[in-house]
Image (tube, rainbow, N blue to C red; front, side):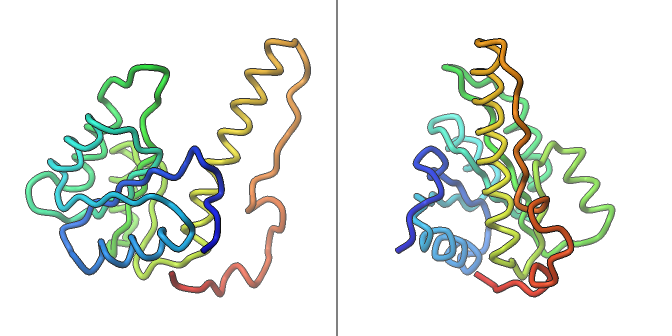
Amino acid sequence: KDAPPTGRLDNILVVDDSDIALRFMANCLGRFGFEVHLSRSGEEALNRVAQEHFEFVFMDVTMPGLDGYQTCKLIKKRPYTDGRRAPTVVMLTSRSGLVDKMRGTLSGCDAYLTKPLQQEALMKVIGDRIVSDVREADTTAQLADNSPVPAVATPSQENPGNPSHEKSARC
């Protein structure tokens, strides 16, 4: 079993009304050592987010009751205490149209992935969060010392135009 990229980002909530999709994501993320929690509705996800801290919420768009867009808006709008910030919300759906992606952006989602899920796309979203956290920590430390903040390349910037990125494995 591979180790999670970092101990801080290992608490993940997956929200989908499909048991198959929930099992798929639990297996996919579990292989990397993440602790995966499952919810079957937007309402259940909101209750879980209010009770526990999740670094990521992967969410389907089409669900009975609150859809993914509505749930995302509510997750992002709720107050977070103890220095916590809202989780990174990733829409994970078969809806791949431009309007769907725009609705995701307007709802506040941090990333939009389409099914069938590619492992590299999933790891890029998680990696981008790690890079963001490192930058934020470096910036905070640098500002305290009045030192210049170094640039950090994201995984997509490290090897632009890599043709192997186009062919990615499924989880």
